[in-house]
Length: 103
Image (cartoon, rainbow, N blue to C red; front, side, top):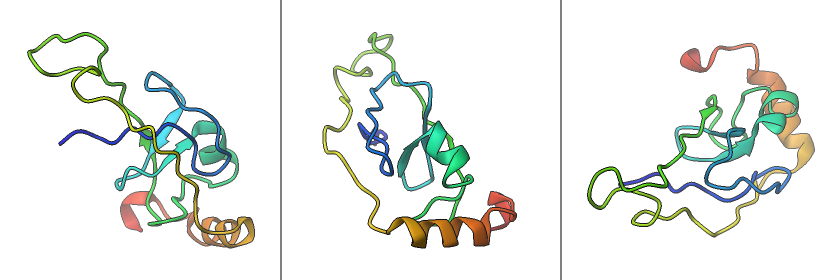
């Protein structure tokens, strides 16, 4: 099973193409741009409360049979976080000083 590789930041709706180096994901594949992760979310996923890591970049070339962007294309479904900005801010501020591995 491959990562979904969502096409946008779920907070600001910025495009995050499959090779974006500033895309970040949580353990549930919620996807945000580095700017939102650092300056709005404070490394707190608004959905699960976990932290973020850089999203891996799926290889464009088929280095092994059946494994590449061609065979596992990224998602085209855009997502939007379901919480309002004030709720996200309160959630992030409550958890931001707790390291992700201790949340």
